[in-house]
Amino acid sequence: MLGFLKKAFGKTEEAIKEVLPEKKKIIDKEEFEEVLLEADVQYDLIERLLEGLPDRINRTQAYNSLISVFQYRAEWIDPESHTPFVEMIIGVNGAGKTTTIAKLAYRYLQEGHSVILGAGDTFRAAAIEQLSRWAERLGVPVVATRQGHDPSAVVFDTIRSAMAKGIERVIVDTAGRLHTQSNLAEELKKMVRVADKALPGAPHRKLLILDGTQGSSTINQARAFDEMVGIDGLIVTKLDGTAKGGAILSIADELKMPIYFIGTGERPEDLVPFRADEYVHTILDEIFVS
Image 1 (spheres, rainbow, N blue to C red):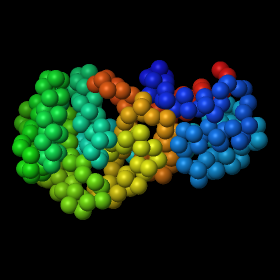
Image 2 (image 1 turned 135 degrees about the horizontal axis):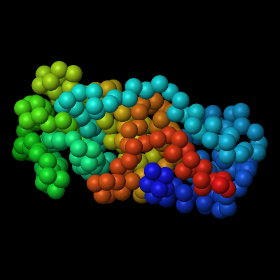
Image 3 (image 1 turned 135 degrees about the vertical axis):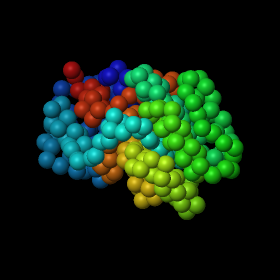
Image 4 (image 1 turned 30 degrees about the vertical axis):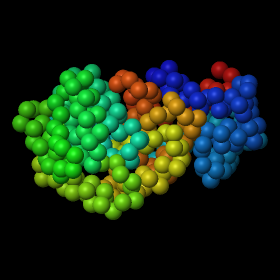
């Protein structure tokens, strides 16, 4: 797992090396602050992380400081809790939503589960086509319609199809227009209501896809979507292409939601479960001598 994380945070590690060219056993408090700033951790959080730390910091002290960010209560939802288990994937265009859906589907298939996809982003023809191509590539069914059709009908038909065929995992795409648009908010709320009509309690998990290259700026975006429909957890994508890997600290601190997965590349298998301790150790490996 650490190997996957090192790949994901490669550019972040390069940024750390610019600030701290050589690893050390003990670093100055000022150096630790510079490293966190370079990795795109928000300044207010850095100030809190540095509180109580001595002027000279060892790895254990740094670890205890960073891991404290993740010590919040969050409700983790287990896909084994319902059959079919319905997930709604939410996020703005360009965040990697469709690719992440394919990665989730691939993961479930590898675990031995049956999967169906719902092309609920009917605002863009390209989104329907892309998801349909992924479904064909993965060998899973997809419920799709034409551009401009009611996305809630796609939600209903996808869930009912899963129920009729005994399919275990339902993954529904949603439109990704700018999160400030009120019509998108109403559309998402309707999709959630219709999912519950098709199967009481659905969707069981609403996952927000955040673009890791945007760093801490995604926090306001996440808050807006959470106000719309209530977000159950996060997936952070494109971390292999950014030096802003430290933003996960800011995201966790501000949103206090479960981070389920991170995207580590473009292949279907490039989606790994997020583990806070492994994440913190990956950062510290670039600062401290083993």
